[in-house]
Image (cartoon, rainbow, N blue to C red; front, side):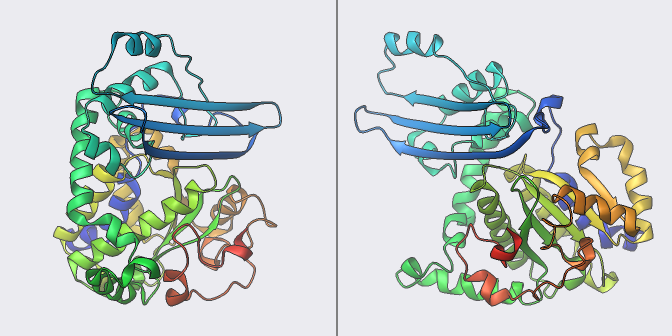
Length: 371
């Protein structure tokens, strides 16, 4: 029925929207022996010139190789011919073992064009150095579309006050900016039931973000979106410190019923935020305890879903299904952080929303146990 479809559509939206179509197979993990990837990205003012410099460094290591990927893009007002000539002959180091690096020379060239199209203010407002790369991949290499998309997202982040949102519990700034105190109250209310939170990591360091539709406790659309964005930003920060730009979703439908179904307008806003502003962020999605009609709906839309996305969505029912999550986390010894709904067998601490919200942005709940 239409009502039932609406009731679980939000879960499908959140799963699919985080994984837009992949351009090539190498966007997926391409190095089976990679055991650790560390990356950092920063944007800094180039005081020696009149423009800005974007720096991105990615360090990937494995049993057989170690590569350093460095990309530097200058946007100077004079744009001298000598600098352009040097850029054309600059060596591009590729690394397919991490999503926080260029996988091809086309990506490098495309991102340079995207960055050159941005204003100095827009470059400074980018949350990280790999934002152009994500939009380039999400738009399948269509540079005009990627430019339009990244500009739209940067404007949205400004209007949505994402930077203030993620600092809502920062004691150094909350006293100076009174509106953030209200933001903190909103996030506390939305987090009371533990409907979304980051806990644990997969075998390579990507954080696991639990999403529990059955624990929905409010129907305030704007605050729902603020909470979603805060949790996404926190999960992304957790993965980033381990050298990854993507996250794993664990969507548990236990306790879900029609009374928890969001309005269609909330579903649309969720889709817009995830698909337009958090593209290329999902590594894998595990759907646990899915209602029967969820599977029916998935079967209907599956033919229209990009093959790369389909590979990332795993229905985990029964012992065999849950075992896949355990294996992806690195086996029983490294999966002790998993909760029961995701195949965990160890007794884990009950989620504490107040403790979680007051942790540094890049720290997941119960992180010492998880790592």
